[in-house]
Length: 195
Image (cartoon, rainbow, N blue to C red; front, side, top):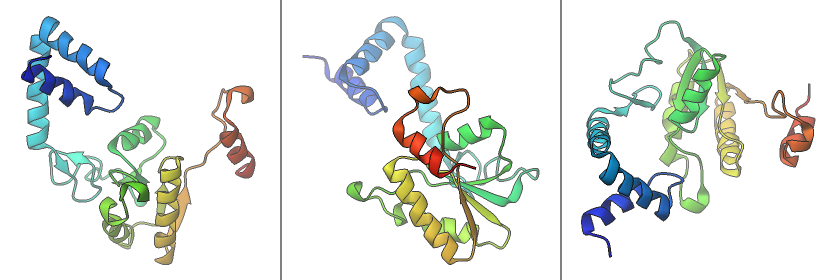
């Protein structure tokens, strides 16, 4: 039987996505046995992030300021608003270098089975933001999972009801891939959405 402090560390590490009991044990033992300085650094960084990070008042991503750097950047196109599920999705769009508009981060997606609905995702705040008179196009950049599609459909209906132009990220066969290795759902969507 493990000591209570070790059990607490293992249970805390298990809260991370993709980390099961064995991985959590290996991480805990590694930090305690080989990298106590790293463990202290992780603890300090978590404490600092928890005390300093909050949601941007405009886009809802994480920031240390009231308004994040992206929302306050005058070089961004305020007429485009991309709706993403997570800050990680926002970062992926930014890394692409192809989008220069602004964002709204839902911090999740609709999941009726888990009790997550429009109010939980700040849909009202999104509708207010998109209807500010400046936004001309809302780009739904949610994932293509069942929940992501449900989120996109529900938001599209609400946004179009307010007279806004709404588009959805294209989906299809990735550039440089071989058709034989692409899943059937992706091929089907690529055929339907062909240009």
